[in-house]
Image 1 (cartoon, rainbow, N blue to C red):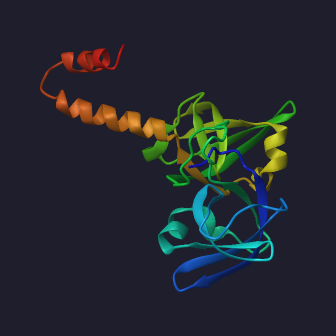
Image 2 (image 1 turned 90 degrees about the vertical axis):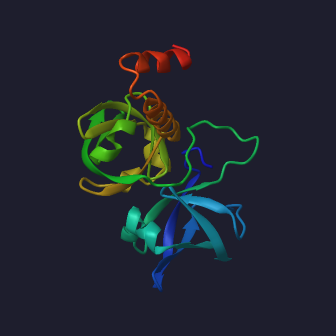
Length: 217
């Protein structure tokens, strides 16, 4: 589990295909970066495992399914990626719960300066739009951000200067795609409501009222 608070960025110093997998060697900007073989690290929001190291360079393998469903396939030599180690027991959860399991990809369509911050606008596939809630949380390339506002098929997040400085978001250009992980709590609520609604089918208009009452409303 992760928090969406990026610890450091890393530079892709080695990249190659091996069978149908993508192998990346990434050198963290932070020195030292305390990880060992077998540790989990979120790379641009994708949970990967440290396979080995060579000096400061850490090697990760993304299997075919991961490459196909995330933006890792567009990473190139010299590219900058976000890095976050798994949350330690007793650590602070200052962002929100992030699993490192990418749900979909969104497209950056707008960057608007607002004072000393920026408003980033993204288009998201319709299937994942229900999980995007104003003032809720979303992980964009592993960065925990708050949704400032939304409309059909599009949402905006406010990006403060420290986020621009400490992540790779400043490298993202208009029309670039980013990894999106929706808030897991929203997914659980949707699943609960869907299952409960099925139980209430055939009970008429009282079904929704009964559900709300059982949920404490």
